[in-house]
Length: 312
Image (cartoon, rainbow, N blue to C red; front, side, top):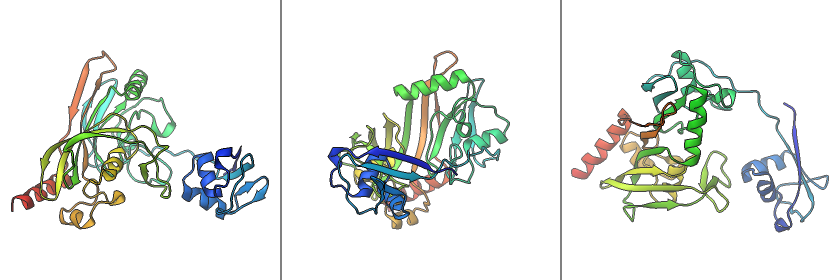
């Protein structure tokens, strides 16, 4: 891969900051990645190689050598067990994505994908978008199950992307979270951005993107609460980050602070989070359509178990 050399001046406001902190702010990297590049000798200030803990001065030229872009990710047509097709027409296909399946291929992911599953089943999707994510207008985490719509026509891709951007799509989730939220219904309005030290995580951060989550209590149990959640925005890991920051992580979500003992007791190996309904204006005629999805077996079992424990 051809190295990607980037050079920018250090803003005066970062005078005296550590190299890794300045690098993260100037180039939008995580502190972990910035420190890693500095440790590899790939960071210079005014032409001098520096370490992560060195300090920068305002106006100095900060240069970093980043890895070149990886080779394009290829879509592999591979059947996806348990991926149900709930609607199919000339413009869209609506699927229930199982847990353990990504929306599309990406560097570092070698498992099944929605796009690969559709290709294996003979579906043709929109050619708009990057080659590895053609037809994809929104995503669900690998560890989250539920409804997704994929564009089949170019018209559908354009109109659905617009609806998601304008926040007119109705996305609803059910989440089993630890404890009892107070208040029992409310709105979490907190910006979400990259975690400052862990590349694989997201967090509520001052410089994150605006993120709004609405929740309502459906049922309270002794150890957990079942919530209905409506997203106003759609940031990566938004529900998981917001509920964790609210001190009520999704049951089974060990990445964001859930109790591993409770997860084990309920037989969960992932977060209890499911996209239960999806509504949007159909690209063909503008009519409102809505689809629903039942809980998969692992979430149903966990919910039955926590309910049974509460009634014991």
